[in-house]
Length: 280
Image 1 (cartoon, rainbow, N blue to C red):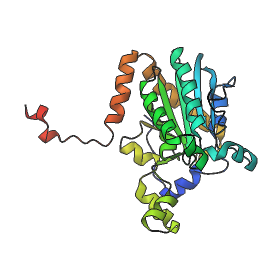
Image 2 (image 1 turned 120 degrees about the vertical axis):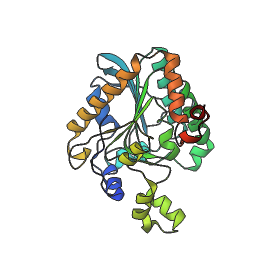
Image 3 (image 1 turned 135 degrees about the vertical axis):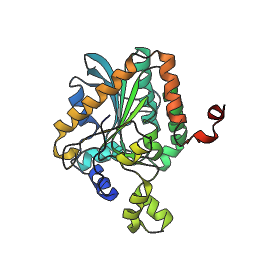
Image 4 (image 1 turned 180 degrees about the vertical axis):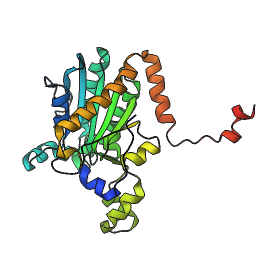
């Protein structure tokens, strides 16, 4: 396990997670798998450019990849919808994930979104149903899955790609049910309290690791992943190897049972003194 370093103030981490030079999904995927081939479309509505999905070679084997992509320039960000997926994005993710299961290949999912797209057109095309279906089907996917929060992991938009056998976070990534700004607007009626909200939400990787919500924290170069994309990708590669190696040898039924139990344990504290098993 990679141990979390000394913690930074939560709002500082938020700013690093959102840094405009931070490596995005394609920056990692093309380094992990230089021959990556993108697959497009959900075979129903169209293609969602906020999600990169496809297949490549990693560790000498065929591996499938999913990645929420924000875009580097303003034009790319508009085209990628700032990493906020529409319903067809979640359907595309499932289409590619099912290919991984069909051929018995591992799946790596990179999460980086402020949330699913909240626009009227997304609601009209069933964004809530698409996310719910993705969550349900990823629990049943008969392939090893490792999900990594590489930047922002916002609400259901992130959770739709974060159902996995192992959930990892980069050291300066964040994950929360709501952004600090949204939380401050709800609780204090003023987004200016975003710094206080960030501290209260418990959104940093070390905090989530300590709570058992993520399985490992991937160290970043000093100052953050934006300072050295190559070093950040190398650290992610090493961590992925460790966790994927622990999954590929498992029988499929055991893999699915462990995945289910991993999420069932979240938020549950067992009182050992009052436990019937202990009392007996």
